[in-house]
Length: 195
Image 1 (cartoon, helix red, strand yellow):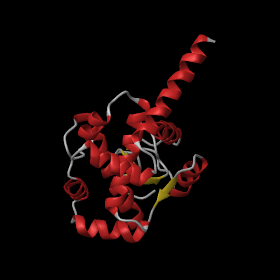
Image 2 (image 1 turned 45 degrees about the vertical axis):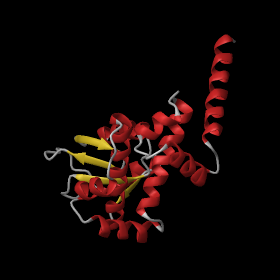
Image 3 (image 1 turned 30 degrees about the horizontal axis):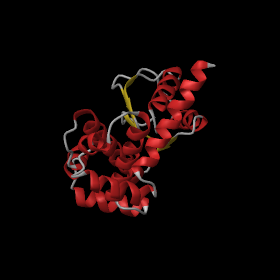
Image 4 (image 1 turned 135 degrees about the vertical axis):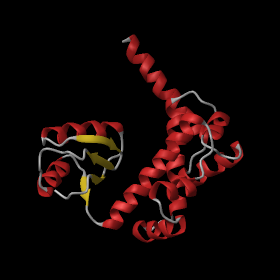
């Protein structure tokens, strides 16, 4: 294994991924300091030497991939910073300047990071941030009873009208569609509880 104590992992999308990965790395005898989506930090004093091929095989078994290319690692780190920003907005309701957050997290100029991201992903970083924010909007509409006004405020949108337009533009559906999904899910849950 490389001396670097950071591993960048492709394919981690949820907290369950973190749990699975934590269990698997523990089985390999690796001392993990922390695990976030896309990133594992091993303790400096890791006692068990494990070769890279073993780690790759374990990750592959669960649909993950060890990123060894520097640009892939950088892209993963950028995506992780975007997730941090969205989570921060969701928790605090304070607006996040993603350009500053990403630049601070990676200790590099935002414009160069954005250019690298665009080349590697075939899409701009700004569009990726919008996509991730819209995913959060959809989740809040379907899984919470928050109003569109609350969601717009929580995720730092300038107005409900702007959020509505962006939701429709990026998904093809308006907010009422996602509220119907929520209502249908709740009805199914109530029905299954009665049975």
